Length: 160
Image (cartoon, rainbow, N blue to C red; front, side):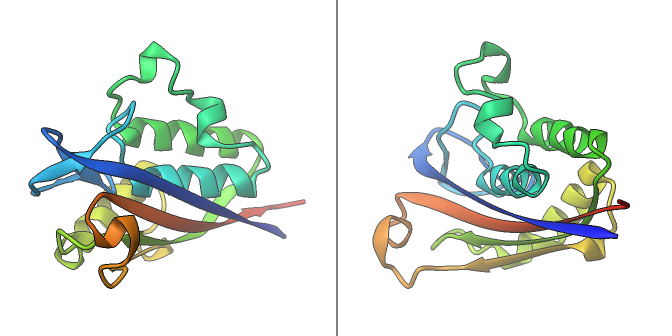
């Protein structure tokens, strides 16, 4: 069995007047993330990790922010399409490990629901998706609560 590893990163600005979507769920907060889609940084980082592991470029290549059909789209749809793309090349997901960097809101209470939601979208076992939350100790744009970032690695497996 052959394995491949991919890395993903995403960042979006926090703004008033938008819903905060992370890991496919709505999280109560005073601000949401600004983007062409729902701006779910966690899902976007996971998509890039999966696409990178499959050597299929990145999320912007497959779902460009210049395409009207992706305006305001639920990122779970993008993730489902990404999983279809990598499966079309014969890959299966081994596991995902992700970290979200945010000062507020506190994300730990929401992690089990994010894991469940993402596992369902990707058709993987909940034990195959790890999500961690951290702060940047009030440093940088994240520390100033100007935005949220996410990092992800994905392991893909293929019988070759």
